[in-house]
Image 1 (spheres, each protein chain N blue to C red):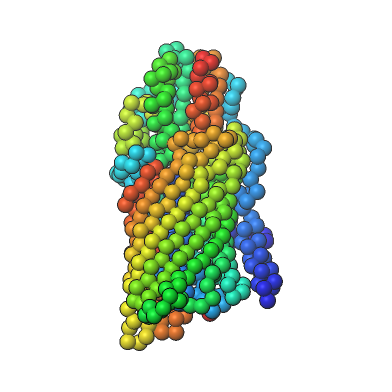
Image 2 (cartoon, each protein chain N blue to C red; image 1 turned 180 degrees about the vertical axis):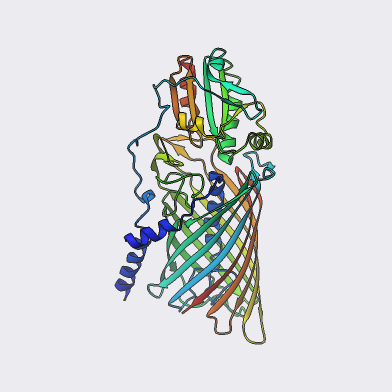
Length: 171
Length: 333
């Protein structure tokens, strides 16, 4: 009776769970989009959520690098943005730090999200048509560093301040 | 297998924009609530919804419908931040639970939520439905007889019901790291987790007191995709999760011999900081404290239980503030 019950239970579990890839996650790097490390990007222009324009070559003419952080205005995003504000903005005054809002559908909504979060000192790109998201293969928590040669120095999920620091120290 | 895969895939309804990671705290809370609602039903039914088989019953199913609403979030320093005007996120869950006795002192339980994310942003409403993470639990009942008493007559009548359990969470729901994840269809956390749990309960009618605790470790896993986008791979281990809950119940016996139970609870869930490639991510980790109220009705034969629950988060750090209500029914055999 016990063995029969156990076997029935195992069959139920396998049938319910046999088709989700998270059960067997892959470790190999998968085919990735544009904007990967050591690639160069083309100059681009987009808009801030204030309605002002953002042109990459203008920013790189005034800084040693531009750091893009892709935000969804989530709890974790707020934590990352606080780290950038408190640990990097002042120490790396030669670097331009910009938030990329790739989820808001309008610039006005992006601005209200920014004000609600309190990160009003940052410029925020309202990526309403997801062009920057596509150009840099950005996703939630992505941090992308581009230097004055338009070379991508870093493009990964921001979960380690030491890595970003190491990249910026080499500028 | 193919039939089940296609059926589960068909549950995912793609729609417009949804704030992906706003779903995660809801999933955290849903997992906690399903654990915290284990009022040990040693006497049949108990104070609230339960997926613990009463002593001497052979099997049980439990279905509940929960609605959880977004009340803003707590920052890392504990300050509360309201939701942006025009933005709203709610989640509905149909929780399916089944418990089966394996022997006199052992039982195995299954829990599968079906999740529907409802959101509103920029004036548009969206919803997305899918299966969540499956949980499988085994419980050992460290007592031989029913311990509910009407009167304390000796030391034996003070003996509580004690359960020891192990719970495995399987990442069957689409997570932010799934191959087909997007902004709309996150219904799971994406990690295996193993929890050790304990329940201590004592009923001296009309009062009952229950303490529940669990500690769980997430299994480290490789991350190579996020929101469907290929990213630089890294290994991620979510922080350890701990839950505690204290519940006090009061039972009224109706003239028909059915039972009406009112209970109140205070709960806390904590999760320590995550580690990415072995390095602590300082922006992670959270805790949340909640108050709960429950009303349960148990039929005279002690086979049907109807439950109404509500839970209100009153404090926290680095997590979403939520308000949850649920309505459920269970049947024992």
